[in-house]
Length: 117
Image (cartoon, rainbow, N blue to C red; front, side, top):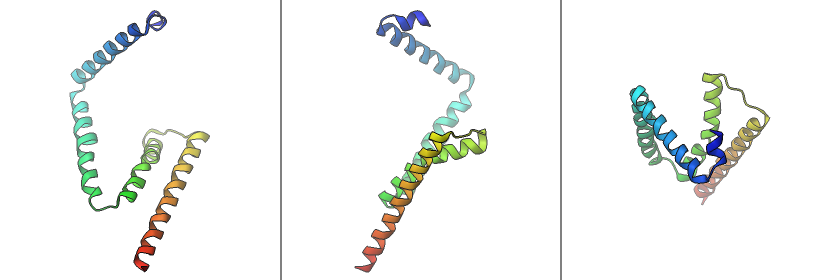
């Protein structure tokens, strides 16, 4: 509300905190399966898979894969939600992809150098 935003910062923090707690309780009460899915599948399960995957992948390759997370988000938002990127979004994707390709090429070069020695 405007009267909270115009008041002291402590009032805004208190109002925001109570609003967050209220919404969390509402979501947990009305959508418990969604909360469970988000907690188990998208957090715990994917972290477990990440741990397993990183055991067999070099750290530089793993970091390059995880750096592409925003690109995957954009791709799936386009495919499933019909979202469209603006020029700034396309530029960001191009920069991320370019950096990833550069890093991939440098890793390949390092491997070739190591095998040649």
